[in-house]
Image (tube, rainbow, N blue to C red):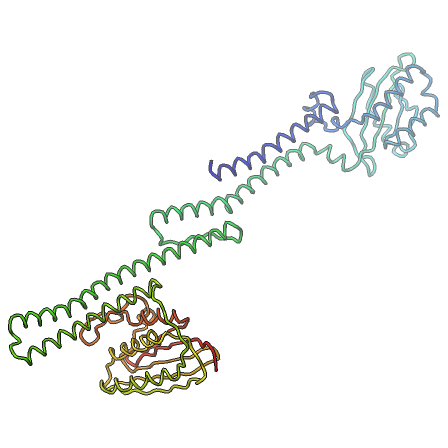
Length: 488
């Protein structure tokens, strides 16, 4: 059974059960106070009959029995005053009439002369009638009429006039209207509640169900709109976040797949190029083309260089795989980075001079700062950055600059070049695996595209960071952050 059907059934029960209860209670009240159900029809004619004043009626019947036993008792003023006092305790007054002549009136009734003159006539012996309340002065009064024969078949009538409470009078008079209004309000409340719950529970759940169906079919290109701060709204927000992350993950996986295929193509090209060269020179030797010692030596040297390139490419690919799988072991040791960088900077300056590249360094590190480094791996990071800078040099006067300084918690190294720079769209991807900003793979800019990705993995292994800033056709800056272990 669906939640929608369950809610509708529960709300229907909330409507039907109170209605049945109200009707049953009303019927029971009628039976208790009226003795049967004959008075139900008269609700719409005279509602007051359902609310008979039983105690007052009982006193009236006592007066009637006393008259039958002692016919002259109506002439007894003290008896009538005693009955009047008894009735006044119940906000009621008395009038006694015989053959159209009023023999006795309560003191309060005497204040309203029109009451005695407008009394209904004798009906029949042993008759009892109750009349609807009517306004006398500022109050409402209900009338009870008891008819009986008195001394020589005289027509005697006892009127008991009871003051009706305004609230009670209002309820008595408008009971059918109030009852129907209660049922109407109950039904309207039920409809509004059902509509509200449908809008705030059922519809959001339907939206989540439709979203789950879309995700099941592989469609993630949509947005879940479930508003509200309740549990369902929070569930909708989490569901939308899950959908968004899943979509991003799939897009990343698709990009990884594209990059993987590109890597395989690039690696295949890079492996094939030196292998083709090596095979060509070996064939030349076997075919006797290298027929002199000088040619033979040149061929062998070329084969050695290409074999070294091939070995370097395979080693880079293997290293990145180990770093990516967290299988590369780092050999950390306490290193004074100032001395380390000074030595490495001297070697770098010598190598760059041979390539016609101007090199400048400004190393302002704290001599007492000690860092935990894997010397070989950190040197690989620096060398990969330099190789990348050299590969994309396009100025007539190429230059590379190294600056280094310390903060309270880390050392900051920046390597700047005046190369071709990196496009802003490509800049955010240069540390990603399998990514190459330059899609062309010529002899000058060739490479596996793993250099900076390897550098990032090594820096992460050192609990450090690496960032890149670049301006197209101006140059690129690579920033390294290394945490300080201790200060001497």
